[in-house]
Amino acid sequence: MKNKMENIIPISDRVLIKPLKAEKKTKSGIILPENAKENPQEGLILSVGKEVTNTMLKVGEKVLFKKYSGTQINYKKKKYLIIHTNDLLAIIKE
Image: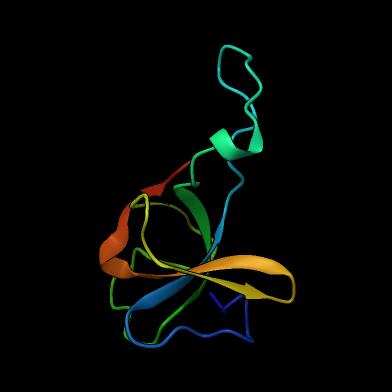
């Protein structure tokens, strides 16, 4: 699949991820204030580096990654993460 983010192409074996939004309320219905939300650990792969040899990692896949991994970048007022493939934990199939 072609990279969705043609302006940012990660180098080496890194991937560009759009983090999914953190939950605004708990399963029991308690609304969380902004400072109590945890960093999201799920995201969508937008682009992959040329050395990504794992054929399971494709653009458009939803993945689970380590809690404080990657480097956060801001590009055109949007937040992204560039993450080393070793920090990816799982692919989420829905």
